[in-house]
Image (cartoon, rainbow, N blue to C red):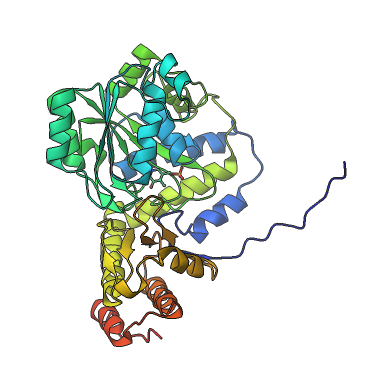
Length: 414
Ligand SMILES: *Cc1c(COP(=O)(O)O)cnc(C)c1O
């Protein structure tokens, strides 16, 4: 067999204006590329991990000792959190889009009995899991949560904080309250909200497990660490039941971050081989977030999302989302049904917007780490051009008026 050596892989720069990954900061990439070759027990690597742990507690707003990074992506963190759910456990999961739908699948996999899993291993129908489906485009609200938890009184309840598939914020306060009222342990997918919204998880005592990701609000795409945080109650439950994993076990993984027997220790002990490059990048991303502060970044997201929302509305689009990192929209009536075509047209020009991944097909434009005027104006300009390229009409003056009102000076959206 001949082995072909391919040319070096070149990946062109794109304008990442989707739901994620966000635009990784230059400072983060620079730290990633500047770390020296060092093994996973080198003092500076271990110190970096301990410092990350402390910064993460600040970013999450928590005193939970079990706060650290799961090595991998958002799904790794979610899988680690759901590892505490055992076959036959009673679960209520609320879904309102693609990602919470996959979370509910994960929960059905974890809670399925051996027989249920074997009967349909990729899509098990676990009798102990109740999935409450809220329609795409709507939020999970207090009444729905309260009704389901009071009826079923599950061991575990699950909800996405911000559902990126439909761009909807769900009522985490009501979720926490209902979990407390009905004795459920709340688990939350905070993949899209951490580092974007201004919240402290210790304000939601009904929630015992939180899982996020590196590539959205934390702006750290170089495959690094997905933030997790677990309360003592979660860890006690996990210790009592066990979990069928070593690599992605919350208690084992925590050891390398200097968390042993529920306490902080000076330095971590071996769990798996961590990368100094990944630690350095993650460390810088957390420093960046805290230097700017979660609250001020959240205020910037709110401010710039409002501009983008009003600008696309001025183009005749209808926005159905309420997240601040993303607008999910229907095209003007004259272009209805051509969402996929428009998205592909933009992507072919390195303008990385997205369609929704489940029905109905809508367009998603994100602003992760694009928190400045010129970035938003660029996104608005390129989206307006794409509408024109498809034969739609955009009134420049209306769009300019929006930008002018928010940012002060008109730009030409030609
Ligand atoms: C992006 C996303 C995920 C998946 O994260 P990965 O980093 O792709 O693994 C899960 N849940 C939500 C709500 C998301 O937005």
